[in-house]
Length: 230
Image 1 (cartoon, rainbow, N blue to C red):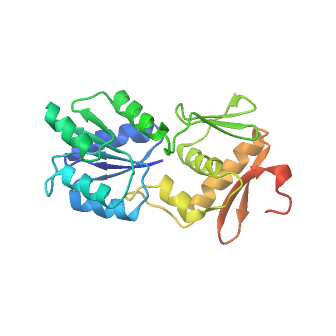
Image 2: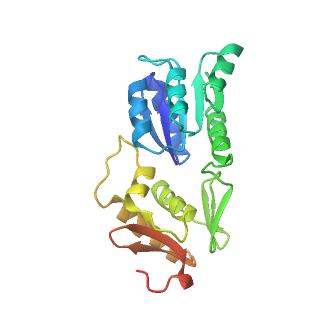
């Protein structure tokens, strides 16, 4: 899952970004409203974490503009403004949750996961395809009820394929979800992660396989239902 962090304090932003990435999220961090607006227009984010005191605009103005455009991406307001009126204004402007600074990282992570579990969100408790079970909250993959070791990138690939099991997922969609703006991506990065994921699934006796649809992307399906795919 890919998040947008809008925070003008760079050291604080790095702290939050690192904490979220340790939990398996892909995070783009920007420091201005202009950059946030550009990123928001370019990428389909699962959640936005928005500071209000930005150097070039008020965060609430930015949030209201997004809502006026019809975008319903969950937004968690992260700010030091602690007045009741501030919280009411933030929620009335389109915020889905409001967390005051300072805060504990585990609370931020819990609130993000709660937003993603809401109807229409991208976070379910457990996704199951064949004998593979993915606990999206615990970030754990089990095959035949046995936990397997899997890298963060491979987990990201698997999650997107499981959410669209039986359908082709374009390569660029996977790439957009597992890499942030500031990460170097080679031309065959997704292929490498898919190759490693295939080996893990085979070694763990998964009854599903990742099939390559040449020139398009990848498809995850139970083997017996996909004769003829490569």
